[in-house]
Image (cartoon, rainbow, N blue to C red; front, side, top):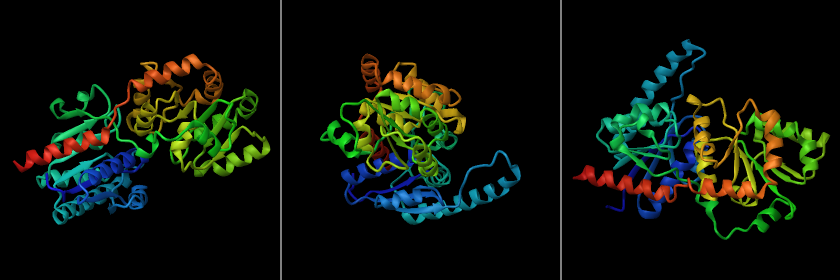
Length: 371
């Protein structure tokens, strides 16, 4: 395999697509230091900020999703899709990639279609237990489809599927971190049980309201919280804590050191995005999952059911959360036996070395194409 590979990686929209893409890129650079990697994202989406911050070049396409509420707006969506396909064809022609990787999201559709149409081998990476629309549409053109859940033959040709799991941020797996150092970093009490509350980089409205409505119970529980609210809920959360001071709650809009936050946590409350679940499996963290109802095909509920059905997580629906989330969390965090059982069960679902396994598949299809 030549060292100066040229790899096109496309997709994004959320951290759940971007972090796996960056992990794959980092593994490629680790194995092939002279490799050239170009990302293709959607204009105005978060990949246009996150990818350059990670040291990679990215080109934006004017593509975005269909509007199911206002059908007339979709004339512009179709126009932009056509424009994006034309731009993607030009990118593929000029960059001349050895392989194209799609991780899901709006931009991966035009990019992977153009690459496969121009006979570039393609690899799809599907993070969720319920396949996204873009990957389902691209499946027949792909050379290999890397998945993180069983039974994906429902969506993809069985002979193209390879179980690899989802790549995660490598900084989360630092074995040198200690719980004491993590607790000290957040200014917490080492003798108390700690609950980490995260709703993704943008926050989660229902989870935030559930915490705010039970501050008195949290204050009296003897447990302590690290509460990431997201930027949009930061001011409201600060006002609520000023009105009802709760010294055992450390609230912040964004956690820059998620490695330390996970290390400090005895229990995690989270949405059920695929990347978050993969991280929790590898870190062996007991978790209460509150799937977002505002995602395509309700795929977060399907992700959460894959864990809860194996007693590897507790599932609380979005509609139940305001009443049940905090009471159940405060009860669970005191139950050492249950926490240990959940930790063992979720660890058994971990898929390790995912980025390395995906790059192995990438190399395989490049070699196959050369022959």
